[in-house]
Image (tube, rainbow, N blue to C red):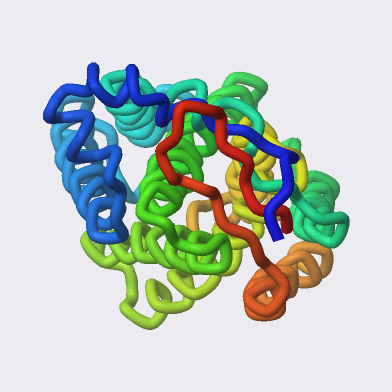
Length: 296
């Protein structure tokens, strides 16, 4: 049932009349537009990575060797994509809509997603072999995490979620479709020569993780916390395992890392359970007043 727990003032007739053709196109939303934005994002990202790695001379197989390699080979392409995504959002006038309070009230059980992500992150930090890294390298990896959290959340929990809500999808569909898009983004790892089976497992895991980020955004009421939670995940994993999507000689405590790895399966299971629990739908009908949204 509907309740006045959230508001959206982005469909006022006066604002609608002032829309450009560019804004009108995107404001209608649609799942295929979410896929289109994601496809353009990953294409530009891969091109940037290729160009930057060739210009800077960084070696893809040894990007964690020093801070400059992490910065130029990994962080810069993602940071540029985050900046481009933010500019795209600004061009549509969606900044308040995306960075503001979530229009659908979260439920207490959604905090489970936050806990499920935090536990392995803390375990990874405990398991890390800190003596294997310089302070500069640790800072570079942490900066990389911020870039990843900002860029990927802005794309999938920001742009994609907004496009899906504007198209009138229920929140259950919004969670499923945005998590699927997030998972498929990581299929691009096959371009770097990664084993197809490993890529498939990564896509499945990231689908579950994407659902956890959606639930985290709903639980906290803001995409900001999902960005920060995501930003803590990649660097803690990289530092613990000593690599990206793989273990290296700098890997920390194998036992703790193995236990933390089981949470990857917990994400998938929690996502499947959430399918039956997530409810609600943002009211996108146009009217002269601010619009209530359906409660969870």
